[in-house]
Image (cartoon, rainbow over all chains, first blue to last red; front, top):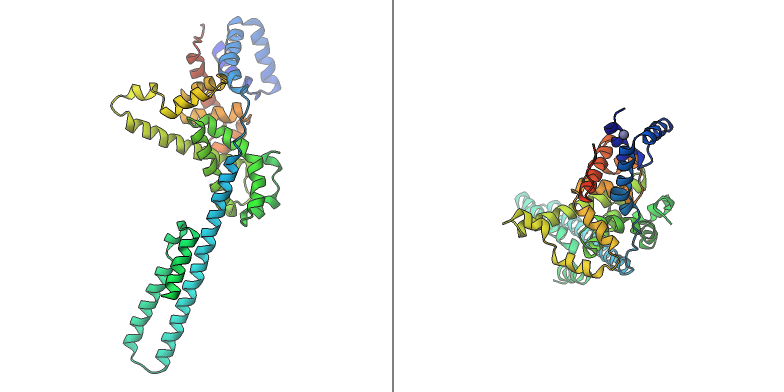
Length: 150
Length: 188
Ligand SMILES: [Zn+2]
């Protein structure tokens, strides 16, 4: 094997401990007789490997978890707020359908009924809008009260 | 406490929204995530931002985690991808700011970076980051996973979803650049 082949191995598998036994032996015997490759191996370790490998890891600051925890709690509140609204929208739709159903049974004209259905499903789709996702809880509550109260 | 020791039970509970269980995952994995972010981002503030983003993604996506790949590999992949995206975004910002002269953008430290440097007393860490900054993002993540986290070639390949020979050639290219930067010129 030529020196440049050995150097490819030195700069990768050798310094990364990925060589098998045979590979290790072949390289070792080459290094014994080749000063150039010995110098190259030393340089790779000193310049490109050791400075990075020897850095000590840093612990993340404690406030990071506190911050994350309140983000997660916020996410959950918003999520459950949204679920509430979906439940509400479904029941509103159900109620509307029951009402239009009664309407139909009581023998009124069919054309007004279909308009009624369109109108109620429009209300329902407005209720389950994804905008509520990022809304703080109090705001969701206000919207909820407006819908129910108003 | 490391990522390997996270039990399936903890993962299931966290997936169901148990924040106390998720705290266990954070405890085991935050050091890894933060240090990869530190070596990939330009300053601590960005690294903290990336760390938070990674754990938010993990929390939201745990429900879809199917235990097919190892949790460690899954988390590593989210970390690397989030860090890479942040890096690309930052590079894009810089290009926009210094669009009038390409070389200037490479030379000028950002304000945050200047502050960072003045806060960093250890000097050694500063030197390491300067070394890493010269590498393109793909090479950099390879080097960080290998040198700082001690991953084997097959593990790096799994995380980055590339083959082992690509891992090897990226490490080779990256180290050749570091050698050149360190003033080493190969003797013939
Ligand atoms: Zn040789």
